[in-house]
Amino acid sequence: MVKTVNEVFYANRLMDQEEYEAAKTELLSIYEYALSKGEPTMYICYRLAWCEYNLNQPEEGIGWLDHALINDPYNTLYSSLEYSLFDQLRSKIQMHIDLNPGPEGEVERLYHICFERGFVNSNLEFQMIEYYMKNNNFSAAKPFLDNALLRNPNDREIKAYRLHIAEIEQDKPTIKRLQKGQISHSLNRLNLKVVHQ
Image (cartoon, rainbow, N blue to C red; front, side, top):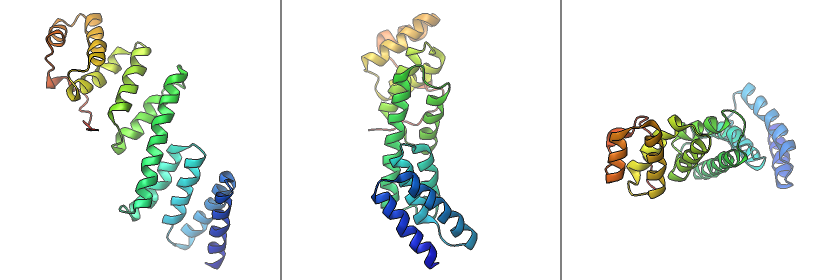
């Protein structure tokens, strides 16, 4: 146990010196040792999540933080890091959208991580709309547009995007509804969570 404590201090010192790869390697070895001895690993998982955050690898950080949150879901340090990791993940999604074309399916994969954990906000939803519209993937954009219209039926840009798709598909009832400003609640086909900002 004393050996593990000394190694944790060493890993923390590496993190203070911003040597995150070395700290991560050290923490992984401590994690394996603690698991083999049946000792608690929450703090080590938390520190590994910090390393991943500083290495700009939010998906891995979220995975490590999940281990810590399972045992202590009300820890404010863990929750604070979780929000930071998801902010970083949303920035990574925007980076992939701006690269256009980013890696095949990467934007959807990262969005799905946010969606599963309930970290989808209006801004991320709009990023996905722009991404699909830019790539002429109208069938994928439609559910996002419909959900956005449920949240904000008077948003001109979203209405214009949705009207554009309806005109391409020659969907006359939707065209009429959009031109009159009537948004049907049945349009939300994906049952996306409505998150109010």
